[in-house]
Image (tube, rainbow, N blue to C red):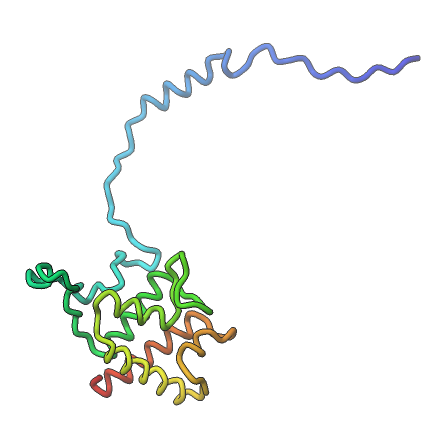
Length: 179
């Protein structure tokens, strides 16, 4: 006796499209009132409205004389403590990096953040040097024997939170000293 392969079940005679069910559902959904959409401000995941990293400081503005002489605007005067805070906020906004000053994605290391803050017109090279001295003071006071803050940044055990903590402590020390 030959064996025959099982036959597939016959196709249903009535499909959802043929029964008018889909058309009925679409008509019902179309009869519902449109949901009220109220525009709301964007809130970042941390619960506050996003602000630029330099939000507390007005960016440098070129005067009429600066524009006539085609020179950059004067830098905004900031203290070493403010510079360190801005560097921390720059890293938080653009991302942190080890092994290079910056990359194509915009992430920066500790030195790259300080250079970016300076390049955006906040502070002077003297401010940056004073801030780096404060960074070294905090590193040595916490028992980290490194030759520069950049060496600390590039250590494999260093994390972004460690860099932010270092910048915060150095900023607090600079503020206490009036720098």
